[in-house]
Length: 132
Image (cartoon, rainbow, N blue to C red):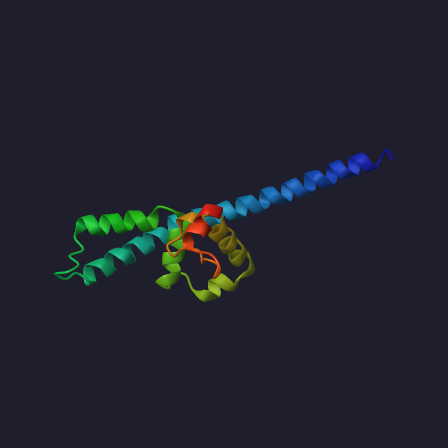
């Protein structure tokens, strides 16, 4: 009986330490997205907008600045846009640790995604929004 409480306390400390390690890895993943991938993405977006200029879509400096602000505002948008533009490859996603961080980021920042989360077939978008 005297050993149960210290063993439970030790198990709790080990579990909390492991959760701290996982949180630090996830934060490094977010930092990597925002420091390494974001500049590549923004230059790619600027280049796209300049190349697509026409009379109907002038894509002037204000448009480019607004697009860069939109895509760079949240890590989930940086991730989705980088995946769409093949800055991040599918091989990178298949790595276990990256896949886990990616799934967590998509879940946590679902409200800020470029593409909205799918709506259930039996619900209207208004009903889905009310549940959130």
